[in-house]
Length: 91
Image 1 (tube, rainbow, N blue to C red):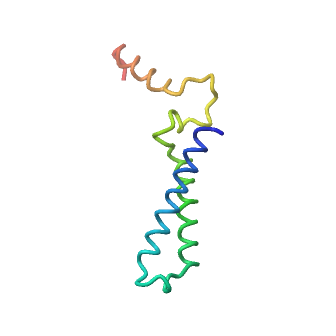
Image 2 (image 1 turned 60 degrees about the vertical axis):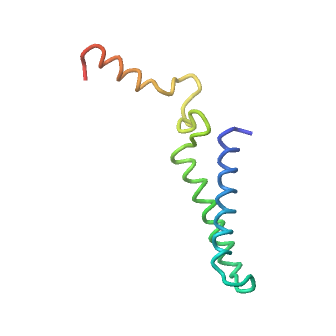
């Protein structure tokens, strides 16, 4: 399994669990927990976590922001070009 997918799923599952714990914790007694709301909010947070991972990348996965770039293309080529331009006196 791709490292990015694995890390994204792990992050989403943790977010779902955290949201469920928070939602359950707001009820005064266990019998007053609205399980539909807990499930709905937890699943929504998991979906948002996955979308955020896709949009911004994951710090634990190297070059995750560049998942759509080809493997042959260097990911930081624009940084290198900028640095070369500054050394030449260009900006």
